[in-house]
Amino acid sequence: MKAPEAMTAAPRRRGRGVALDSALAIPFGDIPEELSGARVIVLAGPVDSGKTTLVASVYELLQDGPFGGYGFAGSRTLMALEERCHEGRVASGLEVPKTRRTASTEVGDLIHLSVSTTSPGGGTRRQILVNDVTGERFAALVEHPAGASSMPVLARADRVQVVVDGAAVFDRATRDRFAYKAEVLARTMVDHAQLRPGTLIDAVVTKLDLMTKRSEVETAEGIAKRILDRLPETRRGQLVVTCARSATPGRTATGTGVDAALALWAGDVAVQSR
Amino acid sequence: MSLGEETTGPSSRRRSILMVGLPGSGKTTYLAALWHAIRVAPPGSDLHLVRMPDELEYLNRLADDWIACEQAAHSSLGTSRRTTLELQGPGDGHVQLSLPDYSGETIRQAWTSRRWPTSFDRFVGGASGLLLLVHPDDVEPHVTLDAVEGSLDKIASDLNPEQPDPTLRPEPFDPDRAPTQTILVDSLQLIRSRSRRRRIPIAVCVSAWDAVGDGEPGGWLSARLPLLAQFLQSNADVLPASVFGLSAQGTAWPPPEGERVPDSPEDRPWVIAADGTPADGIAAPIRWILRSL
Image (cartoon, rainbow over all chains, first blue to last red; front, side, top):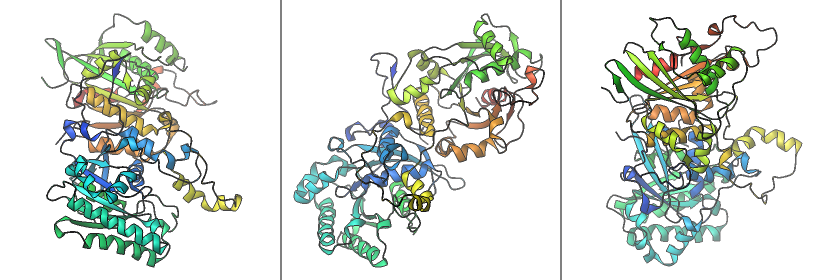
């Protein structure tokens, strides 16, 4: 079993004292050796579709205790996680939670989470690196699919999760345009990204809390199902419906379905709990 | 010879225990109470003084404040007072126990500035074990807006029918306001990464336990610092941990009016184990670390 997140880099000696690990997101080219075997998850979706909120939600839920059968085992990117959670916290001074947009300079950066199974006799640590690439970058891929071949993070991905924005289902034109782009994006992954054999593509519906009617949920699930159905069987992953941060906690709990997404990140079979 | 020990003579082992915690977590008060307990422990007990240290100025000052139930002056950043005690350890001959009293700012600033003093780094590299102190009244929680919204939804809508302002600009992210448990996990990860040892036992001491009242220290940790509790449980193979609740003064600070304080200073401090059962005196966390090496 690997030791937790040991740093191997020699300390940088500049100014006073010893320089320590930054705790910021890890650039793709700088993945430390001890995380070379980590599972890499790429969240793919348009701007504001809920990619970063999903990552922040897993961390916020673990802040309250074990979640979805997993316990928190560490993170080399604690500062990056704290920063991504900031606008969903009271300390931000906001009245309505938001999630900080991923900056365009952070293309390819990875968030690290280590979790361990909490089942009796468990305790196996899983190292996960999540890539929250900017929405703009994925929008560009829909226009220029060949660009996926020059994204090394896709060649290293264990799962690519195409995000289906639950907020897009209310208006027919918006919904159909969104569905079209999501399908193109998923197919781009298959045809242009240098995915490894065995890398699966999931469809993750976000913002379940905004969907007040059963028909709206079914519409979102329908978009996600079509994305999966139109993929080659060898790439077809799972459908997960999530509420990473609920605006209506009385109706839909924060964390709904996030446990299933986390199980996929950790390499376990996801069981959708809704 | 096991990891974490160096011989200094035929029957003497050098152990260094790093005491860490955020400012005000009770490190200096614990050191004062520990010094007193070890000084008065009778020969034959499993952690007693073999030889009076060469230098006592700092310990005497701590003892003065502690005996008078006065708050000890906090250590300042970048300075440490290393206390080396020559002890008879629990069943394994002489122990040279080194306990530097580093400022809590060392840990807090490491979180924000990503640096710590070179002398601290050297000590971290060779530390055999850790004493992690947490003050129960000084836990900064993480409070999410949706959690507040959920619990206060009805009250808010009754009192303030106006809708929240979605155009409000957020305060800038301030790492100083990060949850206590995040900073503590970060410090343990940094210590682990800078250590030369594969396995580091950690005694987590919840100080001022008299102020907590009922309950068990293990349960308190899981309820109040769940991220830290999970981290320790998940890494028990390399960071074995035990939780203690301790009262280095034996009473609230200052003692409430009318509360009877034991006459003898050594009768004041007390420690309970993770499950709430009484532990063997104020040195119990040190004994646990020495036995766990």
